Image 1 (cartoon, helix red, strand yellow):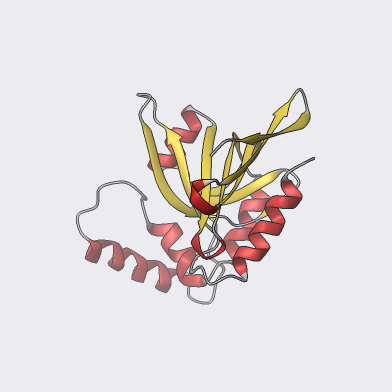
Image 2 (cartoon, one colour):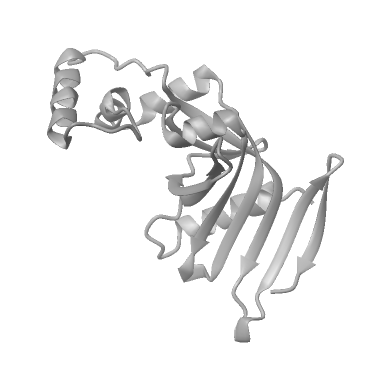
Length: 190
């Protein structure tokens, strides 16, 4: 069974749940020094290929994904008593996919993506706000171009675990793993 349909169903249910940020996922990467790093990003789409998210390519995560194009994500939906873990290979989305998402974002988010040197030291937040105001004036009445340093990634699943809370910590864990081009399922002990 390809787990993408089940992932899609779980995401749909989470979006209807009481959880405040159902598209939030913790993204784990590894730096050139072998040290792991994790942060929360937003899932911005799912298709037959995998899960999409967007960021600054010059950010720490961008550099880590360039060096080691493997990652893991986890979604946690407390109101549904579920979590979803996905591991796999990372690849950049096409420029046209990144352009389409960038221009669908609110204008203020586009400006932030244009001016923010994400993960880099800055002199002050006021300085960044001033750059933002300059960009607002510069692009008034015009389309904001997607900067080359900003775009999307695709996480192509290699392993997926569906976890549901059980009574007395007897949680239901179903792991799907891609082996030689075919998905294999295994029930795991909690």
